[in-house]
Amino acid sequence: MDHLSPRQEAALACVREWIAETGEGPTLREIGHRVGLSSPSSVAYQLGQLEEHGVIARSGRRRRSCRPA
Image (cartoon, rainbow, N blue to C red):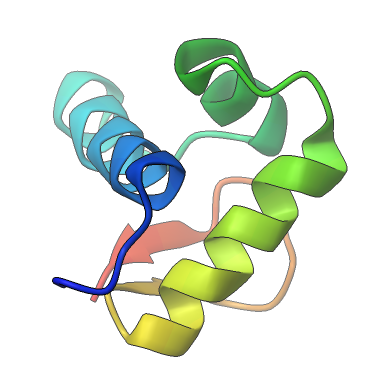
């Protein structure tokens, strides 16, 4: 995880916290709101990077499919 950018670290923390609070993964907009990204496309990019690093897993591109790996 030492190769993560600050935004990626914030998105990962958001995913973990959201799941701990609600029991399900956050949507792109919910992540964006918490980490300060206004574009769902920007959030999707960050999640794609996290997926490439192997720290999250998503089942397809459905809503709320993001989980820590």
